[in-house]
Every structure is written in C-alpha cells, then in structure tokens.
Amino acid sequence: MATVETDRRHEDQVIGRGTILYTLSYDLNRTRRTTMFYAVYKSEDLQQYLTMLNGPILYSLFNGTPSDISAEPDLKYEIRNLACRDILMACEDSAARVFAELFASNDDFRDFVVDPSRMQAHFKSVKYLFGGYRAARASLRRVRSAKGKPSREDLARAYRIFNFAIPSDGDGDPGRAQDMDTQRETFFAAMRDAGYGATLDTNDALYGGFHASAPIIVFDRDSVVPQDVRETAGTKRDLSVLLSTAARLVGWHK
Image 1 (cartoon, rainbow, N blue to C red):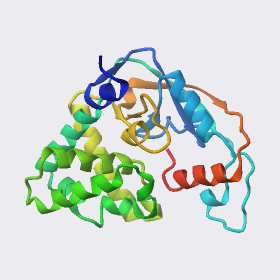
Image 2 (tube, rainbow, N blue to C red):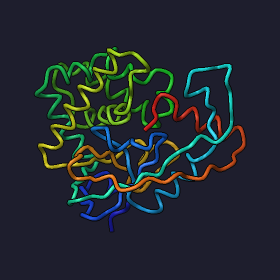
Image 3 (cartoon, rainbow, N blue to C red):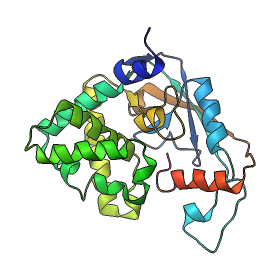
Image 4 (tube, rainbow, N blue to C red):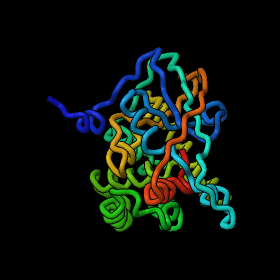
C-alpha cells in the first residue's frame, strides 16, 4: 500500500468540486486579489497550522521597526475558499517534470535557475530553514556545470529550491521581486497548460516543522471562489517558540 508521502510525491491528486480550501493569513483579502495562494483542505492540516502559527508574533519582525517590539497576539484570519470545480493537484514528480521542460525550452527561465544572483539569491539568510537546501544546492551546482544537459534527478532537486522560493518578494528589492513574479507566472502558466490547477507545497509537506499531509499552492483562480473569513483566536507561547516561529515566517509570509 502506498504511503501518504509516496502519494503526495509521486501521484497526482484530484481535489473535488465542493471542497473547502483553508488559508491562514494576516490579510483577510489574501485569496481575493492574488494569482496564487497557499491552502490546505484536510482538517488535520488546518489544526496543525493553527497550532503552530496562530500565536503572538513580534510585530517588529514584520513592520521593520526595531524600537517597537511587542509580543501581543497579531490578528490572523482563517479564509474559506470553495473549489467550484475539480482541481488537479500536481505531485512533486509532475511539477518537477514541467520545471524540467521549461528549463530545456525557455532561455530566461533556465538562466533564472542557474544564475546564482537570481533564483538562489532569494534564500539569503533563510536558506538553512529549508531542510532540503544542502542536497538541492549540490544538485544545482551540477545543473550549472552540466552544459545544458543536467540529469533528471538533479533538476528534480533544483525544483525544490524553486518551490520554496515561490512566495519570495525579493526582500524588498523591486527588481528581484519582479523577476520572481515573472518566473513564477511562467511556471504556473505551463502548469495550467498541462492541466493542473494546484501543486504540492513541497517545503511544508517534506521539510521544516510542518510535515503537513497535503499543503498546496493554488494557481487556477477560476476554480476557486472565496466564501467567508473568520478571525482566529490567539494562543500563548513561550518566547523561544515565538522567536522560532517568527524567524521561519519573516520575509516568507504566505
């Protein structure tokens, strides 16, 4: 029998019409004015995210004001989105295959992947928060030295770096933010052409402290209708957990 990890990495999944997709965000309009968003559709995943993320946050880590440090609960919203038709979710293997096809056919996308000042630069100090970074970095080095013919395995690992970097805003650099937005939309367009409306959030599924069963990145906006929003209740945490959570989120808020 296939394990959950085998399914999510190697088998596409269908999210059925009528399924509720949940998104946690500081922005109550997060899923209404974006081309993509992160979500879960299994109750156990929702409870896990609520437990791990719905706590007091150091405001200064988000507003850039070192003199204004507060551990008061920061308001977060639980957004319910309805799948108005079936959504085909790409497993890691399928998304990596589309990534490899773009690498082979799109010069700018390929340069984005291999140029250290582009895709890899979106990591900076947070790169070691990504559990697969070291292995993926070694594969990325081989991709660069393969002279246009990298192995399928190395490209699949390089895809994990891309998947992790998808929400990056360029750390406030408009040029890098626009570059990431262009490559992100190029990838999502290719995924839609392949019949997909969502893909596995590899980082939360396989790395970090989440290990969620089915976290997804939704990019077919026509398949989803925002339904309602509710405020989530803040929870108390000790300072070490607070700092750890804030460090994971800073600059990479979904």
